[in-house]
Length: 239
Image 1 (cartoon, rainbow, N blue to C red):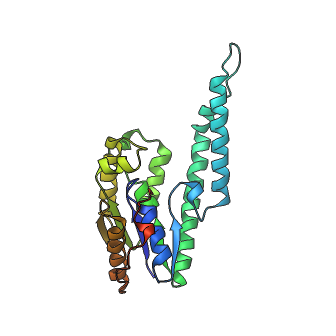
Image 2: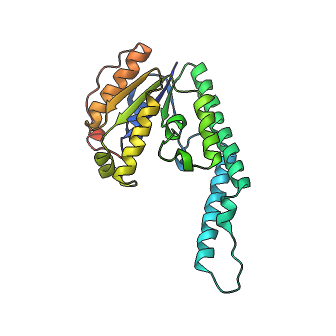
Image 3: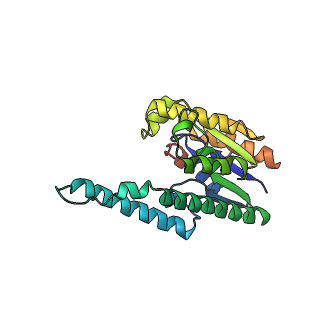
């Protein structure tokens, strides 16, 4: 069975659609979150959880040090510690290990005959932003090189796309300009995939679901049909 990635900018409805597919589609499949939000991961290395805890503790220490600056007192320097070469190298190695760990899990489920459904995907989440490429740290550029040249791409990529103004209205975590920049970066990255489809995410959830499932069904040679609407689908949930 193939792997299918549902990708899109924040606010496009990725998690809403993937969870609806998992809940309703009558086909053996496995849902795998392929993003960096540790709380949302259903698979992650123990070291990833440790790194996240260390990061939170360092953030807390840094905030405390900034509040408690007195004459003659030595700063803890946690900000410099986090930005140091050793910390950057450790995070890079752990990130690569965690990404490959999830990929091997996906291969296992594919070999077992299950369709693997990705919510997000590292290759597209870390796609190169041309406006920031020159100012990125070395560890980020190394990480992107590994993703672009060595990390497997999904067999099928479905991009949920919507204008930046609508994305901002649904999830105002980034500015409209930043959302548009991320959207264009994502579109360029998706176009490099041989099996790529773009779905208008401004449509009602029911219509987006029907279009996405039809794309998946055509790709694997199955007709899922269009299911009836349900109360759970009348309200859009942000991804």
